[in-house]
Image (cartoon, one colour):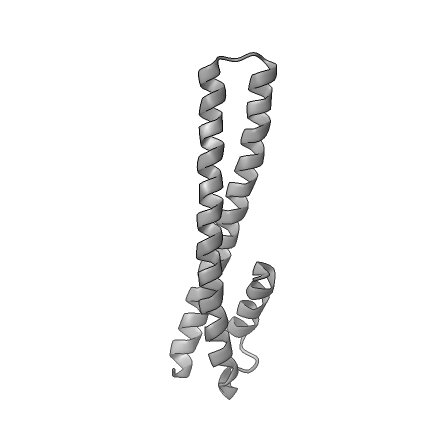
Length: 110
């Protein structure tokens, strides 16, 4: 790949990994909040429908966490491949996009 293509791919893949990290965190936080809400509903003796509905929302959020984690893993692998290719280009040795991509990969911990 040529240098401009690598830079563009670094930006795209880095953005994708950042977005998926944020999305995964939001769904995880949502699960915690819904769990607290469900416990409150149980403590308040709310209707059975309300409690079951929150349970369904929790299950849906758990599925989304699993999905975003899978997509995050794939995106991180793609980013890592682009980073490896970019490191072989002397013109990109200290490039800002390359450094950011490496930082995001470190954050992803994959």
